[in-house]
Image 1 (spheres, rainbow, N blue to C red):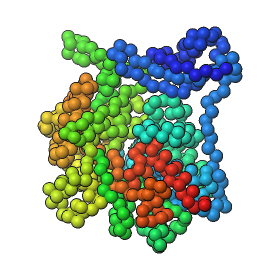
Image 2 (cartoon, helix red, strand yellow):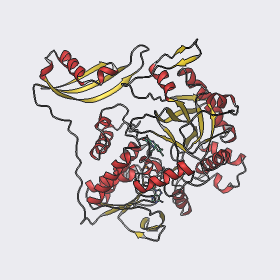
Image 3 (tube, rainbow, N blue to C red):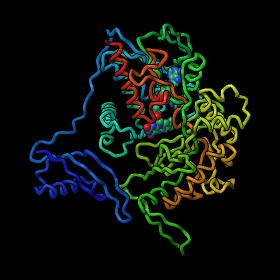
Length: 544
Ligand SMILES: Cc1cc2nc3c(=O)[nH]c(=O)nc-3n(C[C@H](O)[C@H](O)[C@H](O)COP(=O)(O)OP(=O)(O)OC[C@H]3O[C@@H](n4cnc5c(N)ncnc54)[C@H](O)[C@@H]3O)c2cc1C
């Protein structure tokens, strides 16, 4: 017999199989030796009570019958060496890779064109960013095999509610080497140290099945005839042809938006969000979220923190507040993480965050951003007389606005990717910090006033938002935390339109704008789902 049961347990009970077995037996009124095995179907942490943190677990339990391990669906991909239909995919990010896998499943040959390097070679360029402050515009945290997803945090949750598809994406991650935990945890996470092997396994599989992947090949041009792309050209002069083109170049490929605009191919400005990354010692976030009560010793002079212990993961948070009709929200929170330099061009400063699978760094960082509308960008571009009059009203207005702030941050930091930073209370009170605490950001930080970088509507909204979050999370509003500029690549500032019925660009029949760079996804899982969706749509068109 198999039974599904739900239990509410303390963290230490939830991590001990013998104790779990005794609870299962008690709950089913059977003997422990009748339980032949179990696996988790769901696991979430409930830290709402001030007195006790609970793990809510749902289990598949086997009673008086042989235990069968969780059935992980293995998707079968076709070997396509002889396929006559092919699709070019520009970009080997999550969208590009999952589109390629889907095409293989449907019997179509994928040809991936990627401007960056493979995961291994890419590492050297990341080291140069962190150690020497040098940005390679073709190989960085955003560009290269696996896209922005490879050296990301690898959080795999999405607000998208198409649950069926999410499960499929998570299953595929497990098929290519991710830990099975991601299938049952409420907030699944892979970690930067584990993602590269998974991406490499996907690449090997795509190649084994007859797909092609070309690295160090940047799309720089394409030819159009009768509303169809006939050929695409890469920067080294190679020319490729196929039945359809998936454009999955991510939100940082500004040259792609410029290329489309120059060719009079419809693109639109898209609202996005911009701000800073905020970093606290992890222990402060643990205290806030797990209600750990620090105590004082040595005549009440030294605050002693109580650690969360071995059974709880480093705590995270998700915060949102409306300030004067504008959203201020936390974004891509990384418990036990590192702030990373995520620029894609020299002379720009962009920060993001990652964490290893164990999330065992002493800091907790998160984006803290404010929504930006087209009107905001136009006002700022005009007010700053930036000599970009032509672009003020163009679809690239928000992109130019974003770039200018990143360039200002680079200058104020002092070069070599040193980031402007300010203590949190100083930031909210508009004071320059006289010194800065330790920070995980490896290229280094420099004390600056953020109001010299951020437009006032962003700066003031952040000040109010962070103060409000401090009221909600005791200990959050503290000068032991810092803000680091700039968190600017939250989503694409440009949308590449596509028809809702066939996912084709309205002007070019065989061009399929896809995922984050086109404005249809945000994050690894939603980008992967969009890649699959576009691939399925192409199959219905070119196989019929
Ligand atoms: C440091 C960091 C941490 C992150 N953490 C998380 C997280 O924990 N969870 C989460 O869900 N998301 C996270 N993200 C965001 C996530 O990585 C992206 O949402 C996701 O990768 C978008 O997928 P995509 O395939 O649409 O585009 P991308 O991943 O951006 O891939 C686009 C690819 O296209 C290539 N390309 C661009 N232009 C060209 C061209 N002209 N020719 C050829 N190739 C080109 C690029 O090199 C790149 O490889 C993080 C991002 C970063 C940078």
